[in-house]
Length: 290
Image (cartoon, rainbow, N blue to C red; front, top):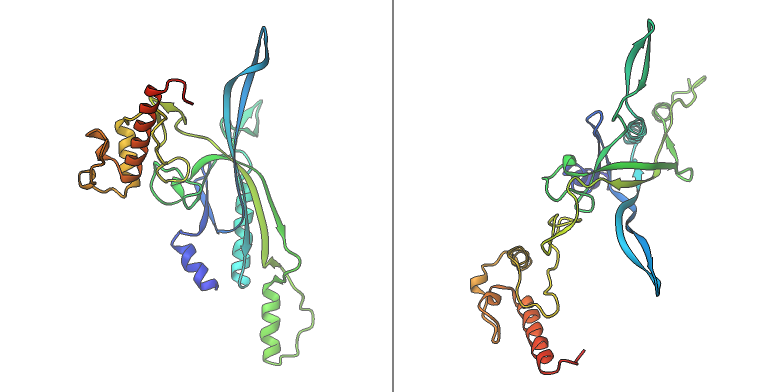
């Protein structure tokens, strides 16, 4: 099992990559996920008007947060020791930068302006910058809060001294006096943190198109015709062609009742356009129809 997970981890497919921007150092863990919860919390400002008991709400912000949990597992002493090194590294990444200064003939260290810890976290396509390429550098920029890890006491701990004792016992070496376990390494650790992404490009709707393609999971969104609208923008057509598998729109069969431009869409969206055209016709015939 460890060999299989090492193979997948080595290819970067099933790994959590954490790049510490301040130092340029990276730690990576096998992605034995126990939790992945993403929240988009929208907040609004309320305004009350005379004769209106309910408020008018004006959008203020949408804050994205990700709660990530995973298990850190070790097969042997070497991997357990390496896991503890990774945990120690991530723990050190959570502290800010300082610079050396001097005043009054004394030298001292003080916090660096702009030296707060900041990260890029990459988890396959679940935590990624869809604009960049592969690897840890394509992760989401943001802040880590509340890194918590629990050493599972129901599982045994490894230590190098015990490994040596076992070898001597197998050789029936009885000279074991004064031997005691030294450093110990947990076999299983449960870890978690909350991540607050910082969007390097502002998410927004501009001219009926979203500003960040393939947001947030690296897949093209499903583009749908608005009710009563039978034409698409060039950007929406491009997305539809991607959803159709990048097929040449010219080879798609025309659908009766559609305009020339609508025949360039995939069959699914031709049906949506045709339905919109029928509804529009019904509304013209029956203005009071809901």
